[in-house]
Length: 269
Ligand code: 6GU
Image (cartoon, rainbow, N blue to C red; front, side, top):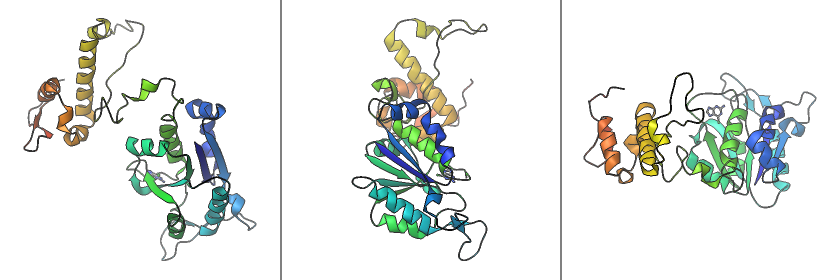
């Protein structure tokens, strides 16, 4: 997969040389190219921003450097990339979107600073490319570079051969499949006693069925506590008889439509 990033802070993307993404690059599984937007300015001060039409606070990124930069990047490759535009006004970046983008051969990211990029740039490339305006959550960052780091890591670890073990992301919280719609429960390793704290007995039992059931119950308990919205919107067809018992103990019951909602009953920890 090829990834291009156009930014006014190339050094902000240095973490892409480290760890999982850095190793995937070193192995040739990822071709990452960072570009400095200011290379496509022509004035003495390398100006990339200007005041907003209509007034208001902050500055807007000028269209001309982005147009020249994107034309150059597009001309440097075969075929057409997906253009990923980080913005707090975008669609949510989810595991589903990460999976979809991980199947594309070429992604171009355009992290902006200030109040964003002149709208005409998004319109211009939207006429020619698959353009996705994407947000990584409901909070406001000073720029799109950190979101690019987040998205690239989420996408890169899904590429074939990047994560050591192919099964490693089958159980991911939010991964479609086995533990779909539930958060992952706690994990433990050696030593068996640490500061007087032990390991849940069942994990030492060697009984794989009981272990799987315990893990699923832990996943329900954590999802109940941290993300009850995931249980509310889960497809109830994914819940077996024991899941339903666990949910009932946690204070959940099926409604008219079969989906689960909280009953007013509270459960002691
Ligand atoms: Cl993609 N950009 C900025 N500036 N803030 C954000 C964001 C993106 N996603 C959430 N907050």
